[in-house]
Image 1 (tube, rainbow, N blue to C red):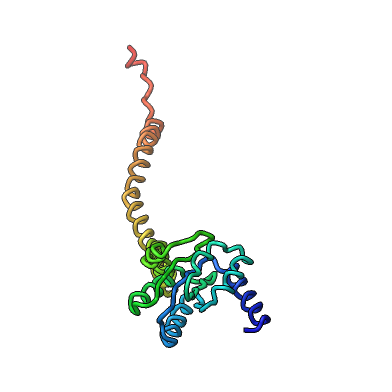
Image 2: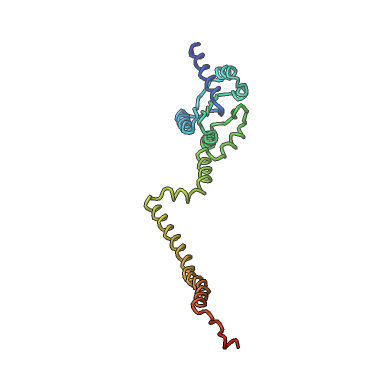
Length: 218
């Protein structure tokens, strides 16, 4: 490899190391090109780029990027899964773990997650976590479950909503009329009681008692 090509590779690796929050290193020795391509395609689906690297150039890139933790993992033939910012570290770890189990060849060495070194055991534990897609579904289900009734009302046809409102208005009107009905007969009784003293007073004025005559006084 010419010097210019080496410098280009180092620059590309340095950029990848600086931009990746998570990376996982594996020993790919024994994998066929078909197996490597299949694994590369699967990792790409989860937001990771799988690159076979030269240790000497990767060491230079790691030093330039300030990723000194990576140096201890670069022993023997190395391949690195660079997880992009929108990638799924758990799904990437699971894909690598599945490949290691199925091929009996791929060996996971460890990696770096958010600036912290992780071991091969840590990668295996990471592979057991639910994927981001599953977690998003669980969170979304927990959030929207209490809103099911409200969403059903909002999504109902307009005529159904108007019908519900009209029915409620009729129900309230019927209840109001039934409550007011018993009070009507009481009004004449109150007026009759109030008129009786007036009638008696008028009768007294119309028929005053006769004044006593002289014979009656004697």
